[in-house]
Image 1 (cartoon, one colour):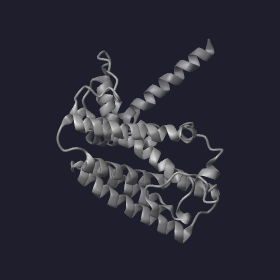
Image 2 (cartoon, rainbow, N blue to C red):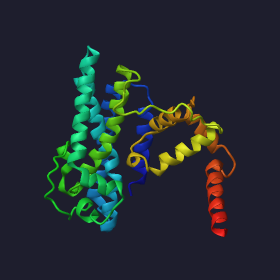
Image 3 (cartoon, rainbow, N blue to C red):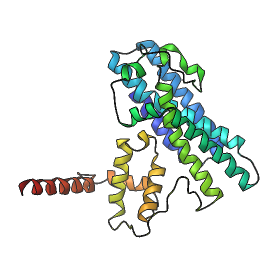
Length: 277
């Protein structure tokens, strides 16, 4: 029902993130893209509704929060770009540190819900992600338009904001790194110098792409650029063009993810040997 629109949205988001546009221009374009996608989703829901409660929960828990979280993220980025002091590194750092405090305050206030989601629990999903659930939750949405009772639940907006702030944390970290290179101790611990990737680059790319598509890092909010950057830091390696690397993987004959298959097979074999002892 929503697969085509969500696939198109994901492709457009990836293209936008790697377009080379300024942060402000990217945020403006991203906001428009997210609103267009949410409007399409809302029209589909208004027209067809859901087959059953489980389908409804799936939509408000795992589908709508994707464009909604990007809408909140791009809104935060746009606000930061406009409000960030134009001169004086100390003033810029002070502003960004205030943003960090706001993020920490949000996560502290909503720690129970964040813990529920991070542990992949589902016993409250009906209350949180169906329109028949409780309506006494106090969280105030950022975009009131999308709190239409027929297109929202008590917690889908909150879950969207959680995912948005995971992305926003990375944005702030990069801002601080540009202002004070090497001094970003709030977010990045010193990386060990002794870890070097000694296998083929394309093998590590398989691992990164698999993690990205599994959606198990930051609840699926980490983009490819971020993941490759982290692995480059950890393993002292540089990927020139990871999209080209992906194309090389796709051009292989089966199995195309041969490194993942190899290490999974090796691990299974080791555990079987231990069972036989």
